[in-house]
Length: 195
Ligand code: MN
Figure 1 (cartoon, rainbow, N blue to C red):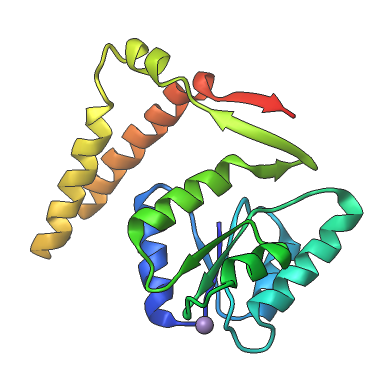
Figure 2 (cartoon, protein in one colour):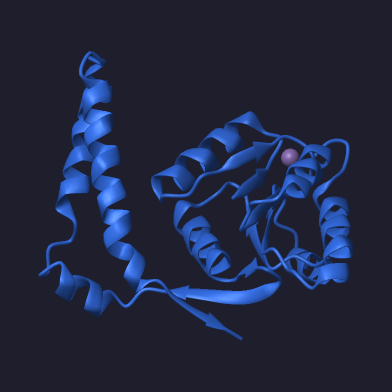
């Protein structure tokens, strides 16, 4: 997930939220950096601040869509704007963006927009939709909502809060093991459908 945002405060806030939700955000501080990072590839969604130095969000989006017109891909772009003006959403959609959020960022709205966008990302030029069958998933875990990983994360969070990081390495290793195990267990539930 690429976060194009020039405000350090918003960078930090968005990064923290996305990481909390399991995403791996990469920050670009202006439009130029955004385009360079996208050229390198590997992103599923772009959060695009409209007001940025060098190349603004509208210009960067135009460049992205122009490039995509050749290969038929479409990376979801969520616009972020500091000034919620009437007609902004329409302007953003017309400029090739898929969604729009106004600042200050509200966690719940960001979460909803990011989840929707992540469901609709391009893979080899084809649209794919990921879906998890929650009922089947819970059945296979016998109703246990993967508490081991949560426990490990909670333990690490508590260590961070006390400032005692002497055992943080081993706590992190436990968390990584639990997440890896969870990832393997979740894999069969990822359904891919092409449209
Ligand atoms: Mn800005």
